[in-house]
Image (cartoon, rainbow, N blue to C red; front, side, top):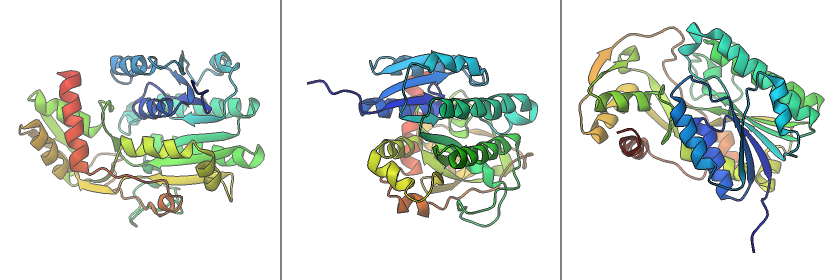
Length: 329
């Protein structure tokens, strides 16, 4: 006997890297998912279309092309009664912000404001939204805890995400919407974004092109494989787990990280190993908006018993390189 879908879920940014993986996981668990995405040209649109094509194979998935900065376009979703909204739509990228600040205002501020207003109007009770480790700025006390002050953002991107957190907090208090913000730490994996280091380095090494290594390779990053993210969402979209998160408050913030801290130059060595090829390296200094080191305190994540798996950075890089060779070559 065919089971009815468990929950109706709206996923914004469903053609994006994390959105695609989360949607695919929740569809596997028999949830009904409506995905929306603007399909912009920030990076290769074909990658977004390929992700969407995979998701559309599931009968419990519906897709709408929607630009969140244009509130009227959300009217196409009015017939659905959603149990959850998962907001993974955003203008991403740190360096891109310096040349294109307006795109962050449009997507991350106006778009998020329109979405949370839609949630209030439709009386949707639960919002899980993406934030970022970038909100911590260049805080020198490690590891970074959710209780840290986030009053010194280094980029427009991180400023827009702090705005999201503050607005969600206000809506949780005034309109009784349960809001959970997830501060992602350097997410990577198959179907990743071409502007991210692992994708960019792999591509250029295999194409015999030079790679640019910032801060002379001394950056330290807390990498998080996307499988950890989708596993956390799998648990959150259950009554027991989500009720536990909101047991004391209607608003929560969680660091999401895999505890795979690695220096950038060591990451390059790993990619070289699995590409079976040496990189042509161009070393440059620190850039505006760069953060020397990130490291997450995941005590809270563990307290809620939401992290069940970990993927070693060496295994994650190997998987990514193998995927890239099949996908792009």
